Image 1 (cartoon, rainbow, N blue to C red):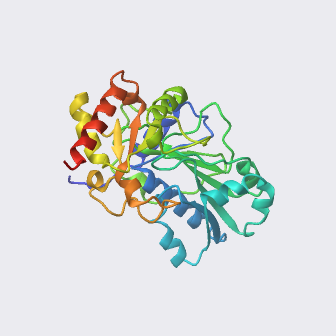
Image 2 (image 1 turned 90 degrees about the horizontal axis):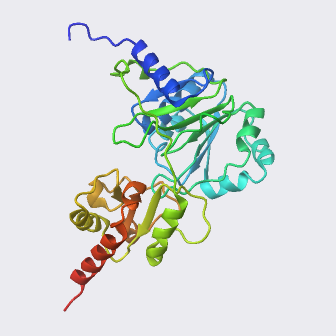
Image 3 (image 1 turned 120 degrees about the vertical axis):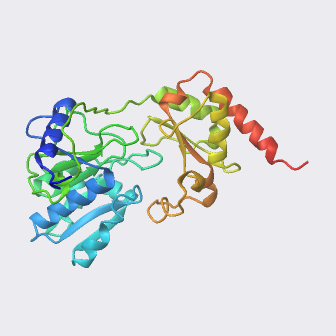
Length: 323
C-alpha cells in the first residue's frame, strides 16, 4: 500500500447499513466495533473523555469479563468507581429512584449486563433506565447475545451494546440513545470495508424446547427452579465428566459439531486458564467449569440430539469405571 490511510467514511457507511438493516430509528445511531470487549472500552472511554467533569461511575460485576481490561485505566485516572455484584444491582431495581438518588452526584454512567456471558441468566433491570435518564446519567446496557427490539423505545441516555448476530466473527454494535453524541476516538479508522451485505439477527428463544431437554437431564441441569434467563440455549453440567470429551464423542455420533452449536467451559476447548477467572459470581467450582456444556437451539432441535447425548454420557461413564 503506497498511501497507508483509512477513510472514516467506510465506518459511517457500515454503521448506517446496520441501522437500516435492523430497522432502528434515524435518531438511534448504530456504531460498529470489532467485538464486545472493544465496544465496551470505546464507549466508556468516549464518555469519560467527553464529559471529563463527571468523575464517578457504577458498574455491575459477576456476569461478564468485558470490562475487566478497561477498569484499571479508570482507577489510574482517579475515578470514583463503585462496583456492585449482580444480586445487589438487581435489588436496586426494586426501588430504582432510591437507588439512583444514592449514586454520587457526579455519576457519569452505570454499566450493566443484561445476561450472563456463559449461562444466559438475565438480570432484572426494573425501571432503572427511566430513573437514570431523569438524572441525566447514561446507562450502558450490554448483552452478550442480542440487541434491543427496533420497535421498542430507547431512552435518550441509553447505549445498548450487543452482537450483530451470533456468527463467529460478527461485529459488536452499539445502539445509541438520542443524547449520546460523544466523539469517537480511533475506532472509525480501523480496517473497515464499504458495506456490501450486513446481517442483524436479534436471536430467537424456545422456552418449551429448552425446558423439555433440561428436564430429560434434570440431575445435570444448571438452572433449578424459576430463573430469569435466556431460552436460546440448553445449559447442562456433568460434574463427573469433562465437557470437551462429551462434545468430541457427541460430534462423532452426530456427524460433526461446531462452536456455533455447542461449547464447554472446560479449559481444553479454550486453551486458557484465565478466560473464566476473576469475574464470575458466585465463582463456579473447578468441577462445574470442567463439566459445563452449552447447546444451541440449532442442535437441540434435532430429533437425535437427546438419544445421542444419552448414548455419549453412558459410554463415557462406562469408560471411566474401574473393572
